Each structure stands twice: as C-alpha cells, then as structure tokens.
Amino acid sequence: MQKNVPVTEEVDVVVVGGGIAGISAALAAAFMGSKVLLVEHFAVFGGNATSGGVASFCGNTKGQGKAFDMIVAALKEFNAIV
Image 1 (cartoon, one colour):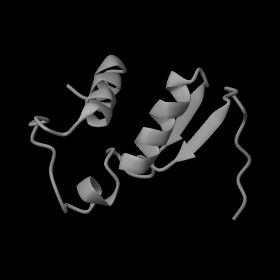
Image 2 (cartoon, rainbow, N blue to C red; image 1 turned 90 degrees about the vertical axis):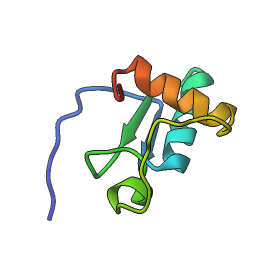
Image 3 (spheres, rainbow, N blue to C red; image 1 turned 45 degrees about the vertical axis):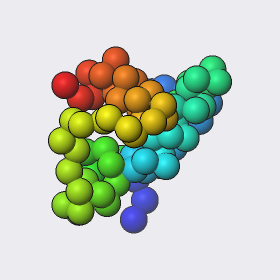
C-alpha cells in the first residue's frame, strides 16, 4: 500500500518510536540544536512498557536520574503530560 502525504514541515532528525530510547534520542538531538520530529504509533509515549500494560507511570520520579528528569520536563513544556 502506498500513500502520498504532503510535506508540511521540514526537520533535521526524524525519530521513530516514542519509547525510552526514542524519546532520549529525540531529546538529545533537540538539545544539540536539531529540529526534531518524534513519531509514535500509539496514543501514548513509553513504548511497550506503557502501551502493552507492562508498567505504569505513577508520577514518582525520585531516583530515576537526570535523563528521566529531562524527559519529564520536556514533555511538560510541550503539554504532552500534566
């Protein structure tokens, strides 16, 4: 199946997958000055850990480290999480 989609935005980096690796890669590229598009198949970030019901994000980020804190801050900035 082929589908033609019009180009409405140009970016430097496209990251496919909104799991922890994809989000980390997208943030790293953005912090280095790239314009980034993060594409996720499901309606939620977190990859299989969230969409598969393997784990939940309860909001307790204590002890997760700087990378996780940066992810949460960036998602809040874009109103992706409350």
